[in-house]
Image (cartoon, rainbow, N blue to C red; front, side, top):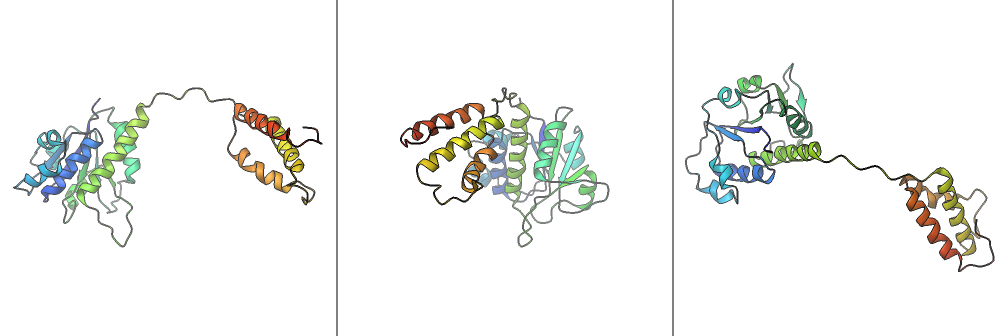
Length: 243
């Protein structure tokens, strides 16, 4: 199933970015995109970078305006670091998840500004919500093709999560009594091996050793395997009964 998620590039200026963006979209299973008034004449560099994505590059739409590019969309997100009252500012991950969710109701769009100045104020106002990559302040701007890849990846991951088969039944977890037996058996083994000779009352070392096992939430089968392994090793240290 092809997701009705459209990537709209406003006034793209760099042919290499277009080729890299086409490849990024195909990497993520996407192909619906549009260039609005592109400022690129020679697409030779774009074709060189669109490795195995020439079909995506050739299938791009070329509407004259942003309105025309998103007229059939039920939700439009603009990529901009600006804060606008009444518009949510979403992370790329949140955008990917919501794009996939809303795409079930109709086409959705993600809009990118040009490489020099981004989206205009009017274009920002036209979008329903906004999103920006939380880059480091020392280098806040991000390359257009990289931004396309980043958002396409988030859409891809959200789509995979949305269509993943339901997980099977969880294995039975070890009970507290079973974990206690593992701890007691480990203590007997360490004591027989001489590890606990200088151990103070309170069994601090044993509890510290068992703590990661408790945190890992052992399954019942795993706890039984631990017990079997410990009992097998314990047989090599005679002189003390197993717990």
